[in-house]
Length: 273
Image: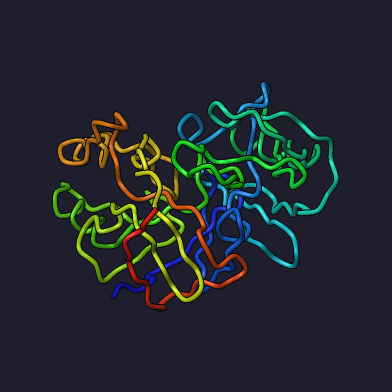
């Protein structure tokens, strides 16, 4: 029996995460996860892939507001319910709807990152859906994640990677939602049901890794040796997905409204179609 080792949300896509002791599960994953996103002048999503300075922005949910902070800049509070203009925004090949957060947040993120940017939140009236090729025919709503509601990774998988690396990397480099422990390395590769209490997360697609894993999640610097991607490529290349697989993308198969808690038991059960 595994346990939940840690829980994390990233209220603004590609900015710093928030560590939680417990998290409410919604249809789109952990509550508040990737509710907001930063877009460029073409309304295309912006991440650490092209703007590593996003790693320097701290996110906090405080007093019903999203609070953003960065060294050398004033703290910014963003009203999570503010009604701005709807914008067609792009996440990879998805064209979806975002609600503009206003000029003040746009100016703030532009100053911090050094580009002309705006902040948008997911439009609850226009659902964005995960790829049916992997999640199945039933519509699976998502926020501004790359493609799936939850990313699950084990401490053992990271320990095995660190055993191979010239210098260890922290879990934060992989930006998981749910971290488990008490399993063999890469046990999360199974396309299985990950059950904790009433909540069932179903593995649907291995997570293909990018340059964000080489980015220091405190200062935004890149690893000069392209680690851990360089080492991962030697033993985690997925020929089917044509990339480096590390972690499991999951959908919420059951338990919407339920809670996940750090330290709670988690079982990995075969999924029968």
